[in-house]
Amino acid sequence: MGRMTGEETRTPKSATVRDPAGGDARKAGAGAPRAWTTRLLVLGIVLSALNLRPAITSFGALLEEVRDGLGMSGSVAGLLTSLPSLCFAVFGAVAPRLARRFGPGAVVCAGLAAIATGLLTRPYAGGTAGFLAASALALAGIAVGNVLMPVIVKRWFPDRVGSMTGLYSMALAFGTSLAAAVTVPVTDALGGDWQPGLAVWAALAAAAVLPWIPFVRDRGTGAAGQAPARGHTPALRITRSRTAWALAVFFGLQATAAYITMGWMAQIFRDAGVPAGTAGLLLSLTMVMGVPLAFVIPRLATRLPHQGPIVLALGLCGLAGYAGLHFAPVGGAWAWAVLLGISNCAFPLALTMVGMRARTGAGVAQLSAFAQSTGYLISIPGPLLVGVLYQHSGGWGLPIALMCALMVPQMAVGVLAGRARTVEDEAAR
Image 1 (tube, rainbow, N blue to C red):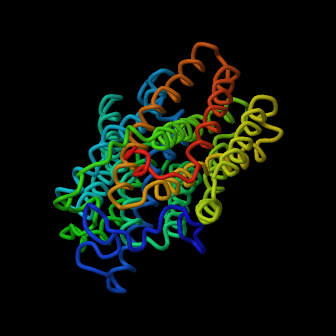
Image 2: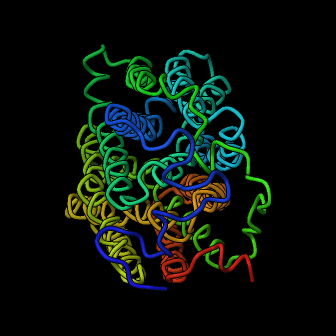
């Protein structure tokens, strides 16, 4: 495997590879995009990314108010913090199939509409069951975006996987931190009721639908948008790839850490005596750390022959942040928020490795769906278990110990996933 220069990913050169799902990966469909099409697509990617986490972090910022308003126990609240992983696993698995049938533009557009509808209705759905159902609708829309964004990047920007993944990840981190930071102040400005404070995020999702409307009829997206060409194997035996499994487990463990952080970190600080508004700002700081780092880390990852050192550095930051939460949650609160924000940048690294560990658009589609669906299944028990431990132990010692314990295998499998391999080669063996 030759060494690649610039921003190219360290897989066999993908810019001119024949994609078994649709010809040249750059020229699938209608050929090279026009300038306005590219700009509109970039805008659509950025706006989509902005909407992929506010449904979660806005809920985390108002977790105590929602629990009181709906009469939730700690275990039920833990279930709600696990719901994103469950929805991402279930609906993410079907995203490539939907994209092949309807085109990824149509699926992403419909997903954003589902996000807007779910966010608007969940505060007023009536009771915990209605809140869960409306949340699931929004999270289903997020799930298809999670899976299809790496595919769209690989298809339209094969020579800029690192920078486009970084831009997408940076927008995602900004949306995450924005919701964490302003949900409490917006709620106060709207009269102190948590319901409009959560519903207001539907407007951002509705705005994100607009750039995707011109792409609703476009099915020329290579791996995700066309049927396999005749004479080619329709699908990889992805489960034969050790790298695919390592990446799936890495994705699952980093998602576990991220959703525990988004769902529970503000509550940890509030229980330690930090005011609600400050706790929201601390969560926002954790999320906003991903804005610059989500752009830098993918670009750095594409220039390294092995991404293991980045995995280890992020994991050590996470261990230090968890230790700080346990021993000095108030005194070093801002430092722990920064360290956990750095650790959460394992997410853009995982997305980048999805693009690097497959040679073709078809491979990226399968690897993205497999790694994310399997990974999110793995992550389901974590936030729920934190809620159960918190309720039954009456403190945060055991939940934080669990977080530390999960970081060790995350680092181990991340090192394995960072090796310069491709799933096509491993599946062929």
